[in-house]
Amino acid sequence: MHIIGGGLAGSEAAWQLARRGVPVRLYEMRPARATEAHRSDRLAELVCSNSFRSASLDSAVGLLKEEMRRLGSLVMQAADAARVPAGSALAVDREIFADEITQRIESEPAVEVVREEVASLARFAGDTVIVASGPLTSTALYEDLRSLLHRDHLYFYDAISPIVTAESIDQTVVFAASRYGKGGDDYLNCPLDRAEYNQFVDAVLGAATVPTREFEKCIYFEGCMPIEELARRGPQTLAFGPMRPVGLTDPRSGRRPHAVVQLRQDDRRATLYSLVGFQTKMTHPEQRKVLRLIPGLERAEFVRLGSLHRNTFIHSPTLLRPTLELAGRTGWFFAGQLIGVEGYVESAVSGLLAGVNAGRTHRGRRCVAPPPTTALGSLLAYVTDRSRKDFQPMNANYGLFPPIAGSLRGREKRAALGRRAAVDLERWMADEEVDPAPPAFERRYSL
Ligand SMILES: Cc1cc2nc3c(=O)[nH]c(=O)nc-3n(C[C@H](O)[C@H](O)[C@H](O)COP(=O)(O)OP(=O)(O)OC[C@H]3O[C@@H](n4cnc5c(N)ncnc54)[C@H](O)[C@@H]3O)c2cc1C
Picture 1 (tube, helix red, strand yellow):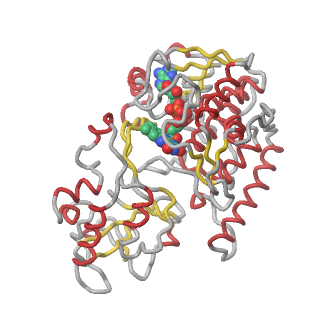
Picture 2: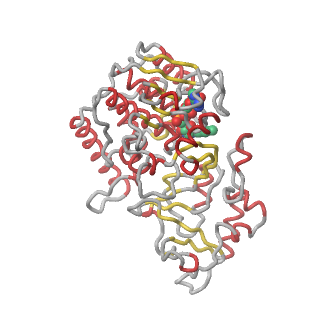
């Protein structure tokens, strides 16, 4: 059993296997070969923020963390042990966190940590392998994946547009139409008059942005340009670019707006909409403020905010089964940010499932996928949804959950979704005999 990448997903997968008595070899290329973002040779290093986001069950990522605890996640045990005060968020001391995971994995008798870059997957033919080499997968392995999966199924840069919930869009303001009527009424259009447009551009230009790292500078090719870069080129550039109103008439005014922001349906149930061409490096608080200036989005609930960074990920909808096994290749699994989930928690939990299923394969058992009514299942159903063409990485969020009967909204609706998830996870674990991995250690720190 082999795992490539000792990050969040790979470490969690190794733990799940080892705790089930499956011997595993974990390949990590650091310190011999560095990435652009990692700073140490530790396993499960957090490359940027020290936050695992909300700890509240009112958010899907809070629920996802609970599900991980229930499944015996090492990442959650280490995160809880390394917790630092951060209000309603779960933030950690990154050194303690990574030290804990490294120590636990290295002292597991069933795990051999091999400090070596894997340049090709060919050597694992016939073996069970989990590929969890992350968004900064080494160049050699990236090239190998490109030939294995075919070029079109592997992305290198990631231009993420914000996503809002459908119920938070003001339907009295937006109108449904496609430019020149091509494609029917597929888009929702937020119309801006000249004054609203000018105010919006001023706000974009005044917003704080996340600094661009050296390795990200080459990302800015046309078609992948952040909106603030476009705005900097001239006051009307956005109105001629992603906000062009051509071929559109606002049925309320009977006129063409000065500019529009187009919203594209992002899931089959039409509970989520993405802002088309709105990749941005504005900071998250600025995005919430500036994007709510757009008519129709004043009360927008963002389930994902925009970003732009190097990110190797595969086209999971066409390549992976919901069990995270590569279609047509028994025993080869993918996990982590590489499968198109976004975030530390999401990466780790996919490693957990890959570990569970690789372990089942090892014992000749059928692979399993959690129900889509759970936070884990809804996320994996999204990334492996075969009908999805325009695929972009996704966070855990309640918009991904199948609807519940009744007219509950807001907090009550989220509470009901959370309760259903808890019941369904328990039932799934019992039915499929998915036992939680035994715990690693008692809490040793009080921070
Ligand atoms: C610059 C950057 C900042 C981010 N910031 C955040 C953030 O603040 N919050 C958040 O929630 N998410 C963030 N993410 C997204 C994501 O959550 C993290 O990247 C997360 O670490 C992904 O987990 P992973 O296990 O998939 O990959 P990683 O944690 O990156 O682990 C992959 C491991 O594989 C190793 N590896 C790569 N290639 C090879 C090879 N060929 N052979 C052997 N080993 C190899 C790497 O050294 C690495 O240790 C960020 C991503 C990037 C790129």
